[in-house]
Image (cartoon, rainbow, N blue to C red):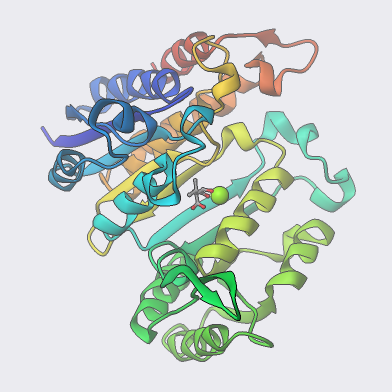
Length: 357
Ligand code: IPM
Ligand code: MG
């Protein structure tokens, strides 16, 4: 029997409650699909600041490195908002991405059949489905470039640097093209090559990588145009390949088009098969501890983990099918519509388990 080692980072806000439901579902899968899970747990974000005085303790890095996969809830909250940048919970998240080499961030934006009406974009634009994948570079660019403050002409000036090496662009481009080969064979590379030198290198390098993928259609869009096209005609996209900061912004936009930010999962992968899996939404401190959060994005992150890191694709498919089935009649408050049952976070986890077995 296969044993998978998973490190759990509950994080802050609703993190602990949504992760609890995802673990419930993972345990159901383990039983049904005959594998074993060995759990470990560590602190990241605000809870780590409170317990250890740092958002990313060394022990957390060590535990994550030993695991086959990491499952994260969410980090951050108003309690830690006044801390300086490098001591905030978010710095812990960037730190773990860097420490584990998680350069490839996959953010699917899909519409779940029972939630079709939830998109704020008109029906005729969405049609009967939406399924695009944002492939975001996650350990480079302006997030990791040189930054600081200095005095210039007698006043304070701040700077952040967008920088990319050819090797960094190549490896993320490959992920996008490989992904496209398994999907509809289309990559849209997003940059700002009309202004930024880092974007010009990005575009040149992506064109080079594309030569190894003759079956994939490649086109290039500027980021401002992409933001517009996502609302005007989202169905033109299959895989969107982009840098760290544009990917941050466009993946939020794409998720909103699907109408269900509480539903979307993400994977952050390194050069091996290990990865960190987390919902794309935040820690929602305003509803923490009330058992009303939507655990489905975290549950679907477990499905991505089973597919991309643990080679248990049958179990991954089963979770996604179970979620679609449960959604027909049951909704947490964030996605509630009249005529369905309003269920709590823990009830949602139970329902998915029941639909699995
Ligand atoms: C995300 C988040 C993070 C990011 C923040 C919390 C640092 O917005 O994962 O999209 O900007 O990468
Ligand atoms: Mg973001």
